[in-house]
Length: 274
Image (cartoon, rainbow, N blue to C red; front, side, top):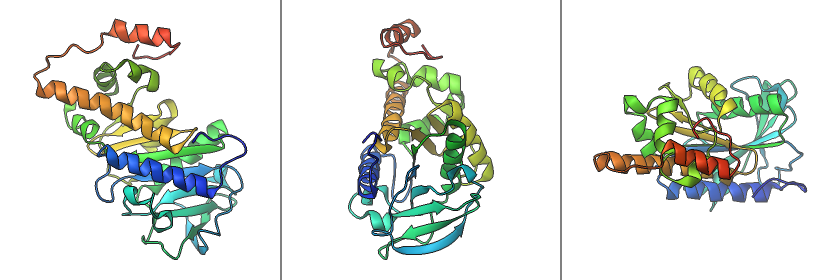
């Protein structure tokens, strides 16, 4: 659901979060309560009909660029596959106050989580950074744990942005079109830490997906939640091909650098990996 005027209402946004969460689980990128989703909404959004309960909260970092706006975000420990059936049980709406230090968290009486995702700092930091830098009115951010990408990040030779992109973008012609910037590889950092948050914010300035080594990925999109999931799916498919080739003893050729370049040229794609 690309975001265009007239802007989507809450029901549509929750539906898109549910579809995205289901797809993340279908590709085995969210076991149990792993993974989280947030959506920055840069227009007036009525949330009280579905989320009537109000709690004042302190934000994990200052977010002055988001003042007066709303972030829909999943709760800690909730299963992404269950958003589709009962979004009120899994999602909260956070309205940012003037100054960006506090907010009002709106939830449903059916809420089944005690607090927001433990990685809310990374979500909020990316929204604050992108809105402050680019003035966007919408952004979806998705964190997931796709197995093949995460596995490759456990191998030191792949724990490098240049090396990883050279390997995973060579398996399908569509990959360079869908992921022209490629994937930014971050070293292992403790999940939810300030160090992880800062590195992820920086990584998502020039890339639209980061690989958190030995943990998972985070992707963003200005168009829709499902478009952010698409980026994860393309990257994970490339990693799956790479894993298959490792298991087979490195027998496949894959696309050559010249062939990737020819695809990029045909589709007017500018990419450092073509």
